[in-house]
Image 1: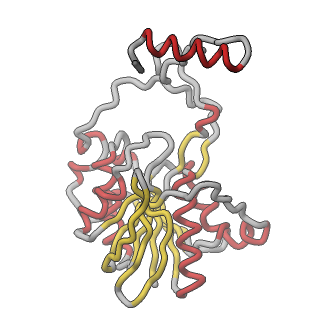
Image 2: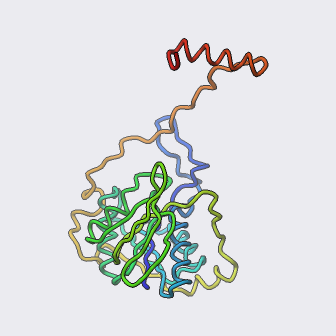
Image 3: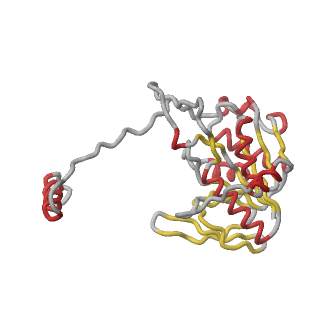
Length: 262
């Protein structure tokens, strides 16, 4: 089975800061592999171990995102594709998905394409469904686990707000993955890091993929991000003191006063 995992390098969200104009301060900001994408990589490696095949990873990003792909290779992926060109600068999710779909068609046929359900920076959840649409293949979002692969069909567990559903989808397909609670992420071994340096690493420019170049980058992006800013800090709220019974009575009185309860 040939599996491709789409990944992204994102800022470490624990260190994100903004200046007085609401612009993200990127200088000195550490970048990491998106956690949802790492889960997709680890799930793909589990499938390869069980059913055999090959796992490739792909990103569309500046050159510094090589460290994210190298981590995927160190974790056990077999090959990396890095799409990087100034022509892709300013791409929104639509332009990014279009370019990714062209690159996927360029490098070969895959039985299964996987991705993180969302990225921790943009948090849109657009890339997986949009790539699937451009490729004309089915997709499933919020995939927590791939239960079984049999022939040209895959059975997946997809999360819902109040439970989950089991979906059987025909391959080729795209699965947008979300890690289960308390998932323990793996760290590359020293041997894995050494082996990663000798694994195939393919660079692709805009001229290497066939498509409408007017749909690349900023020109092909109908979305404009005007400003980024952190959410306002929540106030501490009202503090109730006293013993348990007194505190409960005060809370009930306040809720009645605000007409939350009657």
